Image 1 (tube, rainbow, N blue to C red):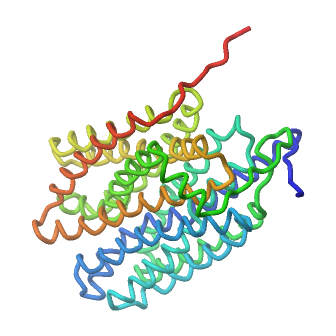
Image 2 (image 1 turned 180 degrees about the vertical axis):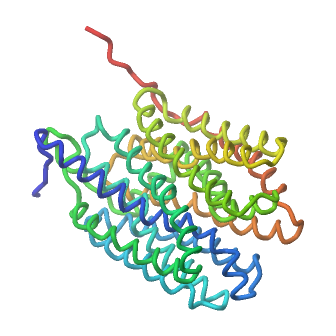
Image 3 (image 1 turned 90 degrees about the horizontal axis):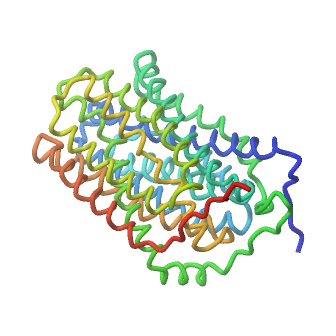
Length: 410
């Protein structure tokens, strides 16, 4: 069987891979994370109610997760390029046609099926797996951190861009422009094409993928994998609630609407820092311990936010802290899946973890709208989030992971 290899004398190959993967994630993730801005205009234009529109957003969270194991399984077999190509086109199409949808089912189709499904195909399971195969092992921790930071940079860039486009062009035209911008990610499909290069810079062969059923059965028998997935459920709940309802939280606190745009942008900016820091840290400390620290930090930050006065400064500081932990869970989660099972079925097995993440995301987005309509406040969602975050911090402790062995100086 022919295997491709990465030449150790071609470091630019690695940076091209990282640029392609991070850029694609920036455009798809950035567009998805700005959709919360359009919830209120969609409600005004359609009169469907926040609860009904939140259902479309919540279905998108679930469908984004559902597509990833299947997209990952296909990418494991035929390579990431064609999967990414279809995904990017679907994100653009779903975003572009959203303003034409006037019913709940229409919004579910555009936002929940096309845009979210395309983002799942061009999402972290495929991108992280492609990067892991194309990058030597000693660079993988930082590489996944850089790709993850790409999604954060996309949010930092696209949030204020979406707000500016809404002011200049109106919400409907702004959505369509964002849909066209997503197409800039198409070159990444060419860069990341193929089944994957060598696992090492020294020309080790690509890891062989097991049959899907065998790989899934083995993963589901691994208690550490199940605990990791349960913790990632909490991450999805938290992230989806913030992405969908943070502008609503800002409004409920009586703060000006632009604060919502700045808050989302700051989450993206500080998530870049958090992702890069986590990419550096995964090679130095046990990944399960890092994940416990992230979830404990979230719980404490939400508690302090609830007790603090709701000023613009408090909101932006809260957004910064949330940004540090927002997607910094991804590099250690990717690293643990690779450590448990290798890279042969990486896209599919991490895709299953992402599916669990998005089940949590569905509940975070949907319950946020339901609780607000029922109580006029988001407080109960915050209480649930604190309990879940504490549980996630504890549930990672029993995961079996060898201690990191640091090289001793000669």
